[in-house]
Structure formats: C-alpha cells, structure tokens
Length: 496
Image (cartoon, rainbow, N blue to C red; front, side, top):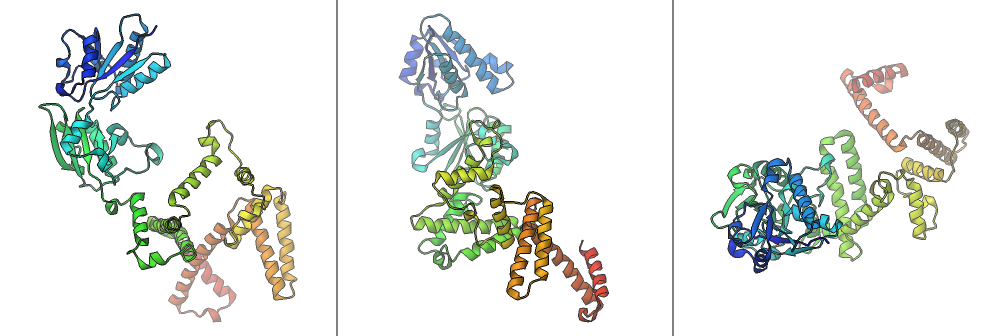
C-alpha cells in the first residue's frame, strides 16, 4: 500500500509564524524532506527530527522545471516503498502559493493513487500586506507570477490570462528572483504603465533581519540587482481609469462617462439611427487610411471602434445588451466556425465549409428564410451583387464555365446597344454590371475592391493630367483626341 504524502508549509521565514499544525507534523515525523534547507525556519525545527533536503538537485539541473520534476519523482518513489508513517515534504511559505513543485506533486500523486494532505502555513502574502499596510480584498489586489509576466507570447498572441494587464487595480508581482527576470517584468509592465509609475520592491518580507523596502519608478525596476532574489516581490498601485490609456477599461469608461448625466451634449443626444451615417463614414475613412494613409490607420480604427462602443453603450442604457454581448457573440461564432482550430479534434478536423455552417446555424434557430436574406440591402451595389451571386452559387445556381459568363456579358452589352429608352438603358446597364460582378466572382476577384482601386488609379493619373494641362496652358476643350491621349500617356508615366 502507498504511503501518504503530507505537504507542510514552513511560513515566510519567522519561526514564530510556524503553525502549531506544522510543528505537530514535524515532531511526529521520523524524517522531513525539505525542498531547500536555505530557509530561516529550518534551524528551529524539532532537534529529534531527521532533515533531508533536495539542494543537490539545484546544482545539477538546468532549469527549475527539471528540479521540480526530479523532486516529485523521488517523493512519489518514496511513497510507493514500504515504510511507517507518511512521507513529509516541507516547502517555504504556503504549499499552494508560488510552489510549482507542490502542484506537480499533487498531480503525480493523483495519477499514482497516492493520498496527499496539505498542512497550511503563512505565505509571503501576509507580511507583504503588513509592510504595505493594505487590505488585499478592500483594494482588489491582483497577484501575478513574475515568470509568467515576463514571458513574451509568440506571434503577437495575447497573454494566456488576458490581452491587457489589470492596471486599474493594484498589482503584486511575486518571485522576482533575479535581474534578468526583473528586466523582462519591467518591459512587460511598461507596455501598459507609464515609465515613471511608482513601484515598491519588497525583499525578505516576514524574515527577521532581511526585510527591506525600496520605492522606485518603474523604469528602474531592473537597476537594483541587490534587491532581486527569491525573496523579492514588486507592488504597483492602481492607475486611475482615466490614465489607463491603451486599455479597454479606459475606452469603455470614457464613452460611458460622455453618455452619462453631465457628459457631452452631442454624445448624449445620439441614437442608433443618428449614428448610422457616422458608422459608415468612419468605415470608409479606415479604407482610405489602408490605401493612402497607413500612418493614420490607428486613429481611424479608433474612430470606428468609438462608433461600436457608442452603439453598445446606448443598448446597455436601454437594458437591451452590452459590449460584453458583442464580444460573446463574436467569439462564440468564431469558435463554432473554426472547429479545425478550436474544436476537440483541432488539427485533425478538415476545414469546414463556412456557408454550410451558416445554414446549419440558421436551421438550428428555426430560420427558414432565403439564403439571400442575410445580404444587407444597403451594401454598395457591386459588393451586394457579388454577395447575392455567391449565396446563390452555394446552392448550385451559377454558370459552370467562365466562357458561359463571357457569352452572357456579350449578350447584355448587345442589349444595351438595342435599348430604346432611358428606363431600358438603366436596366440593361445594370445587367451588364451584374454579369461583370459574376465574372469577377468566378475569378475570385472582389469587384468592389477592383473598382475602388481603379478609381484610385484614375485619380492619381488624372491629377497628373491636370497638372500638365496647367503647366502648359492647354485648353482641353480645343484639343483633338490624339492630343488628349498624348497628355494622358505622359500623365500615366508620371503617376505610375
């Protein structure tokens, strides 16, 4: 039968803070296995108790992960061997605060059917709170591990626990154990905090004779190596929400405040209907920035986001929904439609057909409307034409070859020539444009984008044409076609 593993907390370092429960376990144990003997409480353990430690592993392993895995393997092996009494493992502080070896041990013990018991001890938190003079619950303190904070995610992915740091709450960063780690923590924090944001370094909290406090600006965090070791943590007070630039909390608060009593008269007067034209204008300004002013893209995207936040705030004030519902709908839809990335068979699942997924979603909601119902009637006409034809094509309503489309285009152009009145001409021109949109659809060309780029090209060339005409004092109305074309050719060369 396996022996039980008892995991005991040694407290932060002051022997007076060692619990009676821990002392009772130590007095009854034949042997106590210490993660490390380098702890101020160790000399005060019962003299009749045999102490063993794992310090030798630290000298041989390349990483802390290797150290902890080796310790866990030894403890599990001991627990599976015959013997009297439990295997007692003692760690600094509280066993479940900043103790990776304990978490790994609990998991390994569960897999091997080994019973475990936690004997609680004071963590480093309690003396830290005493030194700072704060109530962590009252101030909403957030605790992060320095190693996780300093780790830079690849491919610009957000951090595992969120896109942004909770800067509007006070933050405690534990285990800032060397200067290199302090540098990584500083860089991570400076993404969200001002460079001169106050930081309090606390070293040796709860350990008599080693307690220290250093108040510095954030940019100095890695400039005091003598203050960074395994007993160091860093405290940052909260940023006022109006100073928390670059966070969603700040943007959300500003918009809500503008809409609140005593806010901006213009913002308070807006409705979903009145904002429609602004939403459209801002979307077009984003497109303009993408094409011609990339340096203005962040500003224009911010203006577009403002419109979304205003709509969400209006809905929230009316008790309908909030910005959280927007995020929820978006995320749930993305997860549903990407089972090959997020599903239980991620990496093995064949890429899904989006249109089939959309039809399944509509069927699940009992929506029996036409597949064309989801195409907005207010979309730009070419974009709408392609969207309608794409939806119809997904049900098999499409030309089978590109030649068939071209034949249809020739037919529609001929009908334009044969139109006898303006109404017929409008209809036939529309048919020509619709067939052109279909042809582009078949070639996987965005007709709206293609025409927009053509317009941009014409604008560049015509502006050069105007310049040449002005430079030479030409009168285009008096020039023949050959002269106009010659100037146009020169303008193209200048523009392109």
